[in-house]
Image 1 (cartoon, rainbow, N blue to C red):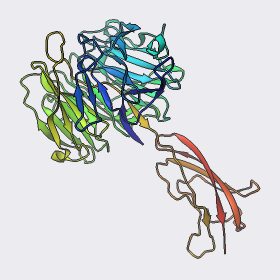
Image 2 (image 1 turned 60 degrees about the horizontal axis):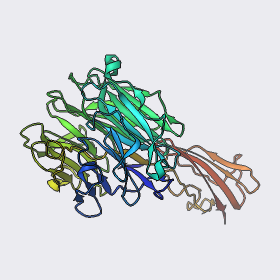
Image 3 (image 1 turned 45 degrees about the horizontal axis):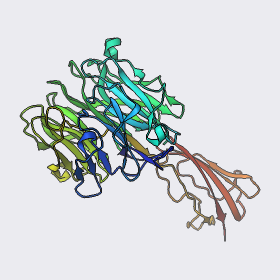
Image 4 (image 1 turned 120 degrees about the vertical axis):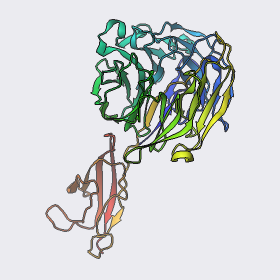
Length: 491
């Protein structure tokens, strides 16, 4: 199973119906009022052109929807949803994030051809709104899209203003596809520093479940007045990485994740000390490396070693918290891109890790890879510290088995048994073989079944054509069925 980070992609006519789908790669990242990042060239091309009003506030987080050609359909900073013309959707204002500062992301509604959810997190300055979601329907407003009446700012988790301490909201949440390949999980870390709780909300065709799957992580997070940072899933959906950046009490942590059940387990603290401030985390495509980015520079954690080895890939020399490396994200070219932020300058740069699967300096880190031009925003400077937030989609690989089409059980030690040609990504398997009259001649639940050509009573089966059927589950627990025929020849 292989995962990639996707932006919400829409396809179809830009009219009254827009079909939701997922492009294999998301080739255009939109920065709202700060232009776009186009991966059709190498290096990616930055363009300051935008339809979003230039005075729109966006700091760390934003989300987008595009068509298959990379054209913008909608974009949001967590307070307003803008359509492809850069106009607020009729019901698109007043979302409940913290003014574009904290996280917001889009997730398609399973089973729908034209609807998606926008999740918002209100955390900054003790926000009371918590985790909310709204439903966007692209068939509304003549195909320009709008929020569905009655489906705006629906509360999942209450905020700090109206909840006890153990319900304080962090600014950290993310999303990943379910093991069944159609549903999704939204996963968030609760914010109280002594709270070990994670909540996973399931999204299905029926909607968003209000009853979370709760996991308690055994790691004690260092005390702090807030919990900020980011989190992301590995590309095989088996791990979740999380980092926090709070003054003097920082860390980076790793967990196992089961995307069939939504349960996190086996928390592990990767921090050497708790004074390295991380804001971004991202996995290499082969899942053997984890990168942490922040005030001190760029760190690599080699997850294939035991104990896990840590290497400072690039040591930055920031003069303050305003000059650092922020969010990191795997691009469609399988490179990891890192936002270089500086509130005191009139520009931004994007750094890159060219070969993130490689160990140490072999990962080929390059600072100042692409320059992002100054934007005309209040106060001057480009107030931009992250990439569009996206749901990590699992390309769930169903088991497809092919059996040998002929075998010769004559005890000559050559092709004496029938079996499947290859058994990969299989966690459970049940196979049955029938004769041409429908009689069962063989049954097995072994991962590598082998039929010796004998009937259940031990007598040799006759020459001829037989039929097999199987039910298999992949490593994520997703079941698939298959069938085929085989020929038994003894002479």
